[in-house]
Amino acid sequence: MADYRRLKQLARYQKRPAAELVREAVAEYVARRTGRLRPRSLGAIRSGIRDFGERAEELLAGMGES
Image (cartoon, rainbow, N blue to C red; front, side, top):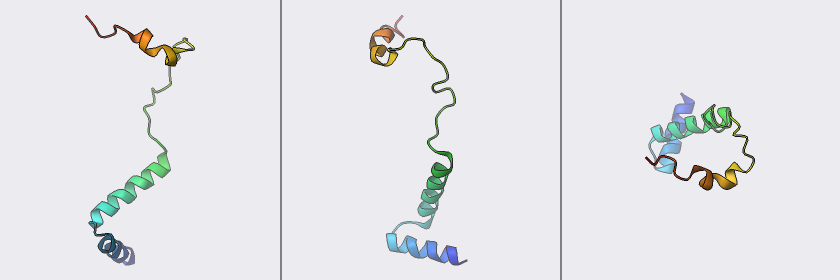
């Protein structure tokens, strides 16, 4: 109950809804526990092209065109 009272007091002080503070706290907690979330597939495959990042525009030119 003391935590709830402190939350309401902080919300009044910051002139923000308590629910907003709770959402912010949960988001910070999750970010701290999980780090930056990325798709598992990111970086899973190697292209074999060492300078792919530098030549990306050239290598992908025309892609998606009929």
